[in-house]
Length: 181
Picture (cartoon, one colour):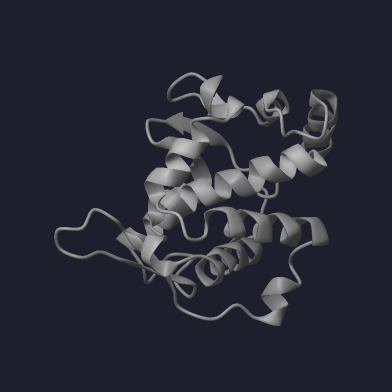
């Protein structure tokens, strides 16, 4: 993962403020990150977080971000996300709801490029009022999920296999090489 902690926090806050809170649980948050990264890849050739995604039963999961969110739930006081989110559970309800501890600031917004804000807005408009099942099923229609092995890493280059991809696999390869330099 190459996203800074402040930018990760700002991204989570953006999702909290621009999606319906009754549907924003941990699983949906992971899918929103998937769509954020892979949509940015399809439009501009590079991901935003550079996290490694893994194919699981309920769809693609950003491994480092998932671990950080899990840590925020297990030990909220010492988590790097402690000042950003609460993870709430209710008896008899499976969802682990994500709730912002603070509002997004202008300083948070300045962490994003124009293309990143464009994709954040697009993802929130597309999935903001949808439940986890809807976004999970949508992710299962994507080439990156369909063409990866279960429990295996999902290469960003597979985004080029989707019909809505606007860049070539070579463009994605180049962006990934530059980011690794």
